Length: 469
Picture 1 (cartoon, rainbow, N blue to C red):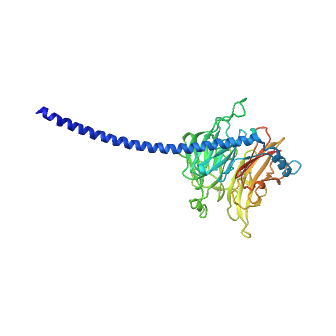
Picture 2: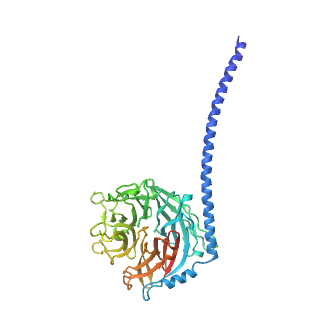
Picture 3: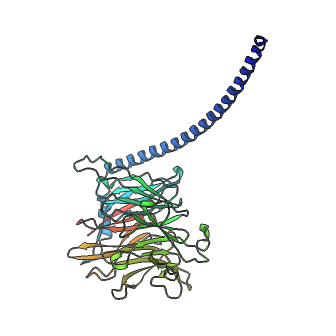
């Protein structure tokens, strides 16, 4: 009987084994399909990254060929020297050093200019939406032909703010703020070693931290005293402080005043974006922050304030009659001077104008007071052109200049701040970019060490460098 039942038992075991194998086969087929889908997704990402890298290589090679073929210093510099030599005497004059095209195709655009405080480098924000490429173009000011190289930064939308850390010790960090609701901190590469060939480039920047802000970012700034502390301004009238040692959450948040008519088009009713942030030095102003938005210019309370009244935003030099939209803010520590730019409209004529004001701190009260009469220029306001105040050593004295782009005439104008000694407070010179038929979007000035001072203007496609003599 046992021998007769043995085939039936074996048959049952074989059927069970068949069921197990079929079940394993179905699981393997499911895993295979998932792996194929993942491979296809990764392949698409790799193809896009390969296209981006190939385009970056071609663009950089084209810029190198242009720089090697002809230097932009000669003809353009002579024409600029003849057109904008400035008045004689102690006032400075400017000479065009180089015109560096960065964006050359339709759809490409530049927006923000950042100056490296320790090395002769400039950074201009660059956007190419067709490739989802939003990065910075790095320009070596004293390099051969002033070449521009496009960096690879982790942003998916336009960069609206860029700042290089002012702290000299340790790694050089670059802070960028983007409309993709994130800010990034990148470690800049070291310069090539002394004696290396001219073709040697500095190492590419490496991502050190990514800050999730949960709102479009419009401005950023480093703390004046703490190298680990940075600030990001958002479209929701907020300023967030981040500590790079624990960058997952902000360590402090300032909520700004609301305006019922502000930023309806941004999807945040009642809020106005933060257009500029300045971190004041702790020795003079307690390390407080100044911010600019569509409601005006404000001083933020210190992070240690616990009293609700002490946490309110304080208007700085409020406008008479009504508030004005402040869209650009800059500060020079040597002059202890603030430059703020406002938008206004004449109710009688309806003409829109840009008003630039310079403020200096009263040594007795610490309050900000106007340093010179208001500079008012008619403006079409097609784009909010950033402005800048900077100083440089001019012999035994130190001179201060204020630079602004005039949108209606597509020119850059320089004014003496009146605080540099012996220069008055009138307009120094005008640098015309009308031949390029482009709008001025940003300006900046600097002086590295004992080198002569320089100035840069940024249009939608080109960076122009000027020597100030």
